[in-house]
Length: 409
Image (cartoon, rainbow, N blue to C red; front, side, top):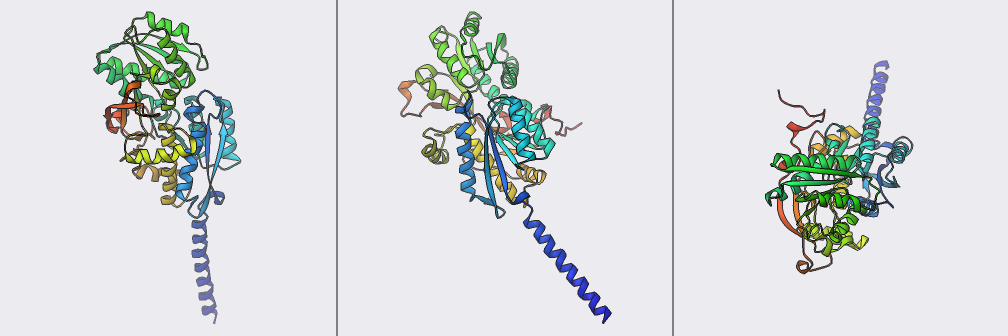
């Protein structure tokens, strides 16, 4: 009798353990909700490169995924960092500590992306960067908790620098935004130019919120450099290109190189001002049937065509959610492992992959802005010059400063 009771107690304990294990697996989603934060510029000079477009792209991905993952709801939080690193840091800390946000995305402005990716490592959450470009994010500032998805300054420099070098443009002058992104873009492009036998004859750094570029452009014009390279972005870039046209820089024989140009920039300045610009990009809405189909859906919501940041925000959010599904949990390291293991095949990238340094490797594209007479429609802006395979577009791992990269020897 005692033996039988003991057997029943053991069996009951085993059943309880099994049920407890099943319950634990079901509860593998923290707080019974997967939370995604979109930390972006909603109202400042980079808002047309992120802002409502980033929010819309992320929400589209959540809707297309079905609104739930592992049977739990997906919630999207939105905040405006106002291009202030201290504001971004405070928001990210609150999201991680109080709101239990699992992943923060977009992160336009490289100074902010560097800050928040560091916090993601500290709090063991995930940061996915699409808006910012500094190659430091997968270099010395890489983390096991962050992914740099759409583009970086190395790829932009590699594409535009080599394309203009092939055209015989050897001498360069930089107008550089004085913050992390501008510095990285100037440094990466300078390295490409010098490696191809070119020279940098000068550079001027300007405050990123300075809208009057007249004195800087006149310095670039007087340098007689073959290429005047604009290592910045946002409204300042648009104003710079318009002013350069007014000062006669292109008509005087110097080539303007916008080292980060968004399709919304082209729309703002118009083809008359932008024609002939050579630029490198990760995405163009009119590339193929898949890009056109997704872009049409985005256009219906935003009344503008998407750029690489929008497309990257959608693609990376979908990849993150698929990784949560595959991992069976929203725990950061388990999800990051699945994100690195799973290839990315969608309208944004084919056979994309996330390396150990956090770099998502995919093809990049060199475009030239059409003349007004070549354009067949409102958003028909680019003609393709070159496709750069992913393994050539981004910094090789052997040259990486990322401490996570294991090197032979």
